[in-house]
Length: 441
Image (cartoon, rainbow, N blue to C red; front, side, top):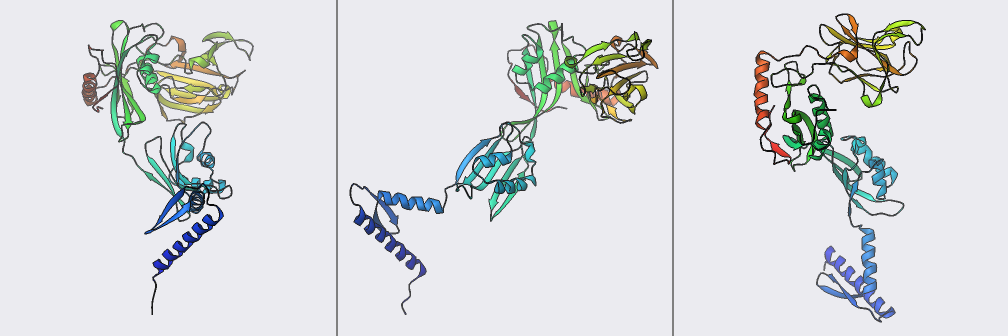
């Protein structure tokens, strides 16, 4: 018996359909139409242009063409909102976000991040069909969200970051801060350098136009060389009136990282006179005998009061260990920190306490918040300095015993210092561009 293959039947059917469409078109309208050639295997069929457009449109409706878009995260945007913006229904967008959460927190998206989206258009009822979403996280990893077989799935690909030390050299015009920023130094690194150098430099009076500076810091780059995150300050130097002041970052045997001078001495030699942001406080009551505002008689005021809004961060005046934290009668919420065998500092009337007894704290570490607890007439910080058991004026403290590295630690410090010095002070300041240097420390 004669048999016809399935493929031949399909081909013959298509051929008959094409001939029918052609004859129908020629019968109904043959005027002013340029022919369009549609090829099907070896058979050429002449189809009027308008009818060809209809056939193509029908094919597109049945098989939507994929579209690609790069969506930039703006202020207030979420993954859900950007998916809705391309026409995806809320139900489908919700399923996509749930799948994404298994490998990445959608709330971690930053303003300016780009999402590369592939999707197929749809109508108002079904919405678009998402094919894939790909983007890089702020830490350099890559996220891939895809839709297949009716389900969303997400994967995270770890990207290997390379630590690179970068050196910036320059001269100031108006200020160290603005000059360093203009040279490309991240703001947090500039602030750290200013804090580390502040024990030897009076930033209000010492800097002058033309003074030179150098900064060495870590950054982490992806394989394409993009800076994904900023690391730590490694070295900072400033030369007011040509007199170089240098600080080196060094991790001690105890595991803490501090800044040391060329002799291996800690640069931290004093307690903060104002353990609050100076721009957010004012002195409301000084140290000494005063008429107590609540008791109505003269009484020794054992500290300094700083008026500031409730919730203003309170910093530890120096490195130390928390001896007490909690309620302390008229002091309200109270913290006591020991800095050495001779010095302690106290912080009273706090609205919040962030440390527990026994906690090691760094200088400038936030330990609480301004409040009005205990015997208080309003939001303020009561700050005390206690020297050998006796209260002294916090605004008169200038020096503390310096911590000096010794033995093997000092030898290790000098080895690290030598590497930093190789890329530090130089006589030639013509090259002021950002430069990569080998890793050290």
